[in-house]
Length: 124
Image (cartoon, rainbow, N blue to C red):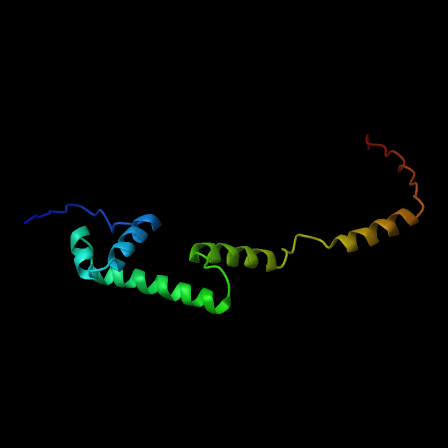
């Protein structure tokens, strides 16, 4: 029997995609049960069941839509990009067309020359 003492706050263990796929392939081998694979690797059987369910649902959705399965992180990234692109410009940004109209109007006027004001006598 193996006893493991965990000290400190190590947090949850993160499993990469390849690790998850290896574990799920093990559960799908003939004669292997999810609980046995979970025991062998020291993880919860419910975690393996959740991974299998998600994989199955993702595949079903892709087949129904006749599309590829896309990672949730990629979907979130694209949604954020859409929000950024749809965001209205700030108040400081002036419409280009307005500036062009103002430029044309300013070029159409003749320059006005003002004579300098006469110098005042500063000695008074």
